[in-house]
Length: 421
Image 1 (cartoon, rainbow, N blue to C red):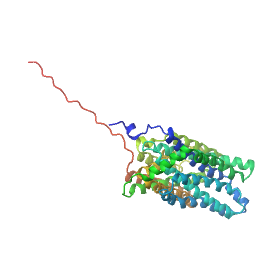
Image 2 (image 1 turned 180 degrees about the horizontal axis):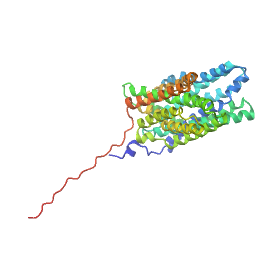
Image 3 (image 1 turned 30 degrees about the vertical axis):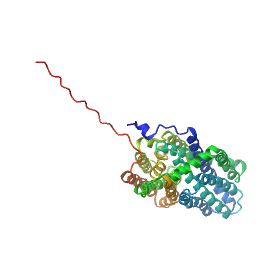
Image 4 (image 1 turned 30 degrees about the horizontal axis):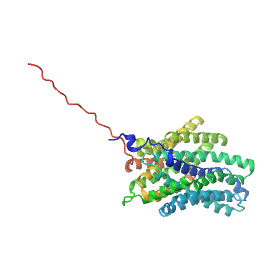
């Protein structure tokens, strides 16, 4: 039997050759789309106020963007069975550029809201089809590494975006970030469009993925459980990290905005480093171990916020939270790609992303209302979301990565030598 590394392929080179260029192109475009969103985050409230709207309308702008993503995830996953996903991916990224630039010319709230919804829909198209193409561009031995690299790129784009957006707005005005945000994305769209080898390669990936033979049986229980994991992951990102943590930092620990900003930037760098360093861990030790460890660690770190209300303790818990959230990396998305083969992969990824995007909408709302009762209530609810998902995945989901078998030691039979006489 071949060694484990050869059987599962976790030593295969990831970013070499035509397949490596395809993976790099997909991850770069998705990261650029993420950076567009991050770059506009710090200036959107100020720009909306300049149009004469209040805080309620700003909430609608944020919700409209998320609703646009939710609306297209599943339909575009199904559409990818019939329409070349390369063109869907390219078109989604291109519309993100156009919607972003056009938002800078908006003169009314309703114009900005429509453009935000369009941008959210286009971003959903780009990310859903991009993840589907990425899954088809990889093997079982490189898929988790590719998804982790994608997460690292997304985190980098999301981390660079806010700082760049604030700098551009303070230098050239509130309209400028809408135009600057599309520059990198536009350049990558041109790369995808004009590089013939990429166009042909990704089109071939689409054809091979949608024509692959698949089993007729439904995805089953494991798919439902991994969608729960996706919900918990996005709930943690938007409900805990972006809503609960700032509230605890300001109202309990007493940090200033600048102090929290530096802390979150440091955690973002830690997340990127861990995501890239631990990329492909589940290719070696199995998807279940990594996912359960990540969810369980996030639950434990979140619970620790109740007992560490000092600055040093809070920062240590924040660091532990960042490490455990990074351990999972792109493993849940890789798991979805493992169990959904061929033409079922696109719709499955669309459903998985929809569960996550719904969590991104309801998570902050749940945390916000829970905090009104008590911070402990918000913490316990957040812990329960991750703990339930971890327990369900550990007990009910099946492993998709063949793990190395322990060989029993060979016991040589005892040979007795007859004694003379």
